[in-house]
Length: 183
Length: 183
DNA sequence: TCTTAATAGTAGCGAGTCGAAACTATTGCA
DNA sequence: TGCAATAGTTTCGACTCGCTACTATTAAGA
Image 1 (cartoon, chains in turn yellow, brown, red, purple):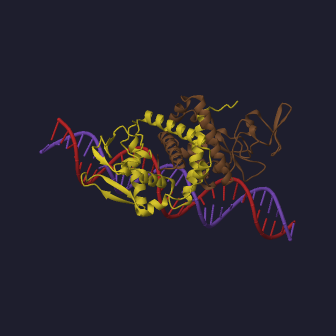
Image 2 (cartoon, protein in one colour):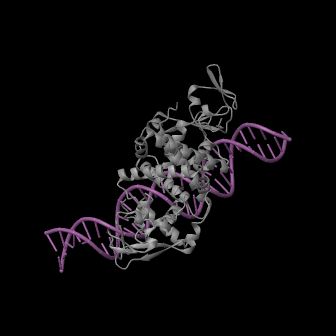
Image 3 (cartoon, chains in turn green, yellow, brown, purple):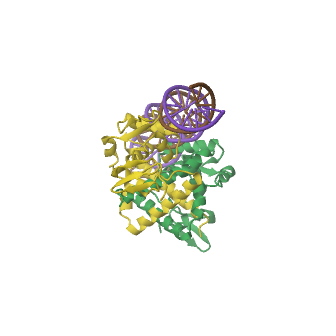
């Protein structure tokens, strides 16, 4: 019998796994936070690519996120585009160079790909549950895919968002939205 | 159907989970790395508490680990004790104050404790597999419990380590060892 | 034995993250 | 019109990070 609680073991495994994963990033041109921010921007729809959204997704402050995004822009991986309706807002778009950066191989991904589907599905489900429950206690946003959102509507062939009251391009619906509410 | 690979989803969930977990640490007197180092020292046996062991466990360099340990020592959470047989070596012991620090509640631990045993066991197994496989490709040490090691022997009531050729106290056997090899 | 290589730990560098607080510029509301 | 809320930035100090260079000690080989 182990004298350590299961929760302590799992907490430790997650930390160890993310450190092993992060150690790979350090070898490249991006540090782990920059990589995570770029990865988010590459998967977020046009309503969800502002510094404040990145900050909430990465569980950090707007100040820190701002610096990380400036660093990515300096490296030419993202470019800012200002809004016309709200002059305070900024939206960052991933450049072609930035998209290439996402194709880098990952040791963790390779290991996961070799796992049986059954294990992968179970793991995905468990991790999603953990994230969902923690977000619930923190009152954090879920950042799910647009098309799985309660505000997502079909109007004939066209999809639109009931919350923002705008038509959605097919690409939008398959991306992360900061306004996402589980259907 | 999702256009994102499972491996990408899991990688993202692990990163998000560790960020949510780390965000809690920042509110306390210790940052995530310091907490991780202290947690390791509190669970490692007397053969495994040197700076170089902490460095390998945390997947970082000796230089970085050295600084983190100095910070913990400055705060009175660990204290160094030099070896007599090898004057180069240092072993850090966790003080009572440091042990108290480990009792802090954790949001992630609370969520895990509420999960059904079945899910928890599956998750633990999957995460262990991922860590093991990644360590295999990196040729990293497993840092398992002493008593589950191939070098662990029973001699009557007494346990001893075949590799280091020393008798083991009951406490040693239930702690993490850097020399651990799966039995 | 003497020399050389390996090992253990540290110090300093530059880049960057981290939270926190102070700040500017807009926008929304009453 | 005024005032609060919002979006983003800047600066600060503490710290992590890889890296390189360094000291001290121990081990191995000629």
